[in-house]
Amino acid sequence: MKNIMHLLITVLLMLSANSSWAVYPAKPVKIVISLPAGSGPDVQLRRVAEVLTTKWQQPVIVENKPGGSGFIAISQLAKEPADGYTLALFSVGDIVAFPILYDKEDVLSSVEPLVPFFTADMALFTSTQIQNITELKNEIAKNPTYGSWAVGSIGHITSAEFANNYNNATHVPYKDYGQWFVDTSNREIAFGFASLGSSRAMYQAGKIHYLAIASNQRDKRFPNVPTVKEAIGKNIIGQSWLAFYINKKVTTSLKRQIEKDVREAISNQIVQTSLIENYFIPMNTMSLLEFHKQINGDRDTYLDSLKKYNIDIKK
Image (cartoon, rainbow, N blue to C red; front, side, top):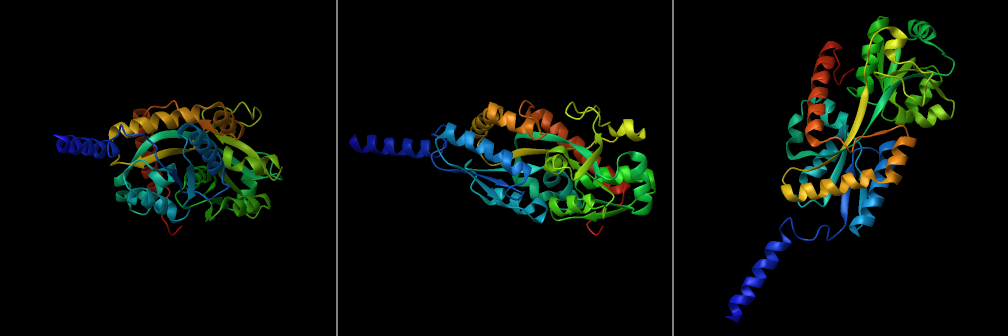
């Protein structure tokens, strides 16, 4: 009888250790991000990590895996054990644009969205020496160039659509934001579209100038900056987003538990204030169903734009 009881207890312990109702987390949690340390999204992610560390009473470690158009970070999440101890933060480019552009959509087969994090409107920016759309039009005539942080990125596509109104221009891709902003500030590049969050520091330092925002309505923080439609008579919408992802094989019950905790962390006042102060728009109230619709809509837009503007990895 004692042997049977001992065996039963052992089996129960083994089951609980591998079930979704076991204590989670029982060890440090890692969050992989496809962007470099110090980038705008990285800073915001670390705010969330701090809140989760306090809530979970376990270290939440941010691991930067930039490069490879997001494939390095996605592959990292896919190969980790499906136990919920590795999460990831991916951008719209990582999930929508780059897999299409590089014909690697199969890389997404092992991951799925967990919680939308934030979005940001795209701003048309130029050198501070260019003060309005008319001056930019003249600048493009002399220097028909625009930059972006990657081929096929939302910045590339939004810029290509804008340039199409001015006899087009040559795309100049950059490996990092810094040099792109500097070159545009120095008028080596005529213009670009970047998220308000990413370009904020250069804007506040007086190095670049916002001419328009690719949104349906003006941003209350920039009441004197028109929408693109107001500026050129054509509506161009450009938004970047980032979302938390998880390995698909993690049990459904554990996914929902982690989703709940991450949503609560993003809802923390410190995190919300940091997002808003850095020109990001929180998305934590968006449901996963709504977010899947967002992804599908963005995918259709990218497919259309890549074809329309003949965008490929060689350009």
